[in-house]
Image (cartoon, rainbow, N blue to C red):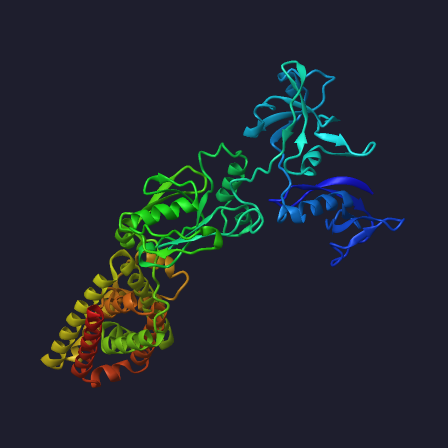
Length: 568
């Protein structure tokens, strides 16, 4: 067993412990530890759980427990924190470093690299700290605790009480200097350490923004970025009085959903200023906000978890850094309102929360109305008369499925490039145009279906009689049969720019796109299956004027529904 000093989880510092080989199991922590005479030696603390060690435990010695109980005395009205180490230091084991600071070989101590402002009259940066209260410090910062037991010298300071006097001896300008006694203090960092101990939680909800003081506890949240953790460490190294007048660092921790914050989902950033005024605390941010919003009445205290919920004034803006301090971005009510369309370009609304049944039925009946007797229908019917039906079916459906997914994707992207209202208006115009055109075709009279079938057959013959194949067709023919490729490419070219593609794009722009895809795929499967297995019979016997007139009525119905949506 030995006495040692171990590092605790930040923001805690180090503590003095006794290492033992007795078992400390879960549930033993906080229990008393007795020596062979029956006296209490300390309190069971923890055990070393690393794989390279076995049966090593730690006990908090009774001296540390006694100091803790003294700080909880009734006359103190609550727990009093231990004083902080008022300087930062570096080991003097390196010979080059000793030579640079002209430290003789017989001198041992540590080099002071930073000193708290209240000690500037006693200690200085560049001093070599030799002794604390007469206890000599070695080059690695250790002191003798008992006999030959060594412990870090900060134990002498952390085990004192606030206000206790301490004497330092330093090596300065080639001679040893004994400094006048100084009173130790608690030097709270700018990022608070423990809630309800050295600070009370507070927050302000400013419009749709949640602001809190940046605390060391934020370091352990998984949402906390690395840059923000570096900001906490960097600012905690600055002493009180050397913080650019700041009392707190204000953190934008959450951006609530609101039309003014559409596309702004980047929380966890330090707020630098409000309307150009540098922020020094959360209370100042609230006061500035009340001044700009015209609220000059009673300001409720923030230290009791008070919440303020009001709208930002039209000209209010916050300036936020990216936690590393290298760039600043302004966010105002007017700029947010004007940037909604621009933010939509990178924050897509996929409409997945909309009713899927409506999109499924609309796309299904729309495909049935536009594809029965259409050019793709006739191509599949004619090719199935001369080639294996399942090969033709797979090629045609492959092209139609791909075109459906592509059209739905375009329908989702377009509303995020232009406003949703403009997309709905365009869809209404297209539905009306296609509806009137189909009704005109139906009212004009019956077309000669035999001539139309013969025209498609001649087109297929001309395509097959060409001696030269394109490079793409030659490449794909190594993996697929020529019949499959012919059905795929002819169907794709016939469907591109067709009214069913335009209608699919329009539906996906304001309906659930997944439901639109499923409904369109079901409609294409039925229409293409009918074309392949009974296309010639159906194409020549079903009156096209009835199909066209019914499809026109369906498109007019879509246009009316869209128009009512625009009015709403």
